[in-house]
Length: 153
Image 1 (cartoon, helix red, strand yellow):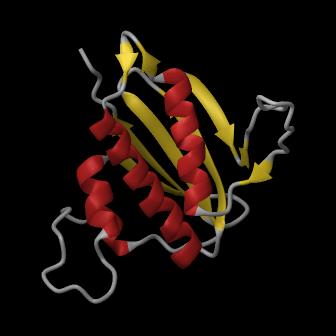
Image 2 (image 1 turned 135 degrees about the vertical axis):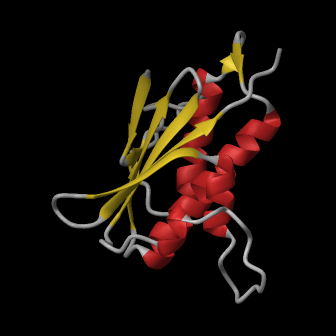
């Protein structure tokens, strides 16, 4: 397994054209998506492990939902860890809240009535596997999921 610690948005020290980039903490869903996309492009973009576009879209949707939930309901996004596995990508999203979302262990059914939210966890349940929620020793929690990546033949 290739583990990438993403408590900071790791960018190359020197970009093409001589532009330097500093590490920036991941604090938004957009930053989390960009980092996960970079990991997938690096580790899942050449044969025999080339992820399909649909699989990457599903992965980024899960990242978006988990990161947005951390920002909106979890007291802030503390960090994101990405681990490449033979089956796909393991994500660990850390936030500041000890509250475990009740919907996290639901059926994955979409709500019958839309009240402005409520679609995130059903989507995560449908697209991810091995969902686990752990309280962090210093406070907050970590939500871990495996998102399978279908590969191109």
